[in-house]
Image 1 (cartoon, helix red, strand yellow):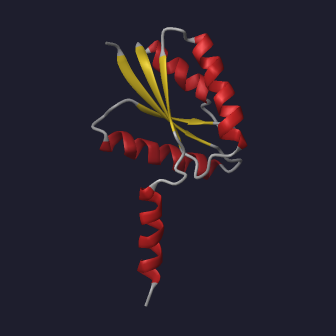
Image 2 (cartoon, helix red, strand yellow):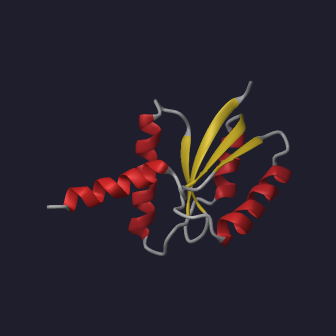
Image 3 (cartoon, rainbow, N blue to C red):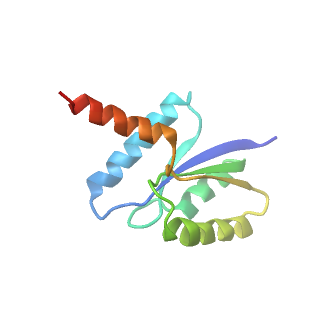
Length: 123
């Protein structure tokens, strides 16, 4: 069985500090995962792109790539644009299995986070 690589895919921003904060967060996630290969990528408005990071992982011998869609809601970009990108990546890398994780929409952990934040401000 080949290696598994992981990508956390964010939207991106024109503001450089947003991209740097996202990249740093992905680095912390990688650390929490015991040094697993976890790379940041941007859907738009940033680099590296999803295709670039898939190329990096495929070049490192990863035969399975997990893409975590770091978005709060499953909108048109997720359903259409990112789905089309992944379909193209599957054609470009036929020996690689792609596993696309859902967005954070309706995730109970997000709801707990919202409750925790609200309760922390309650009198």
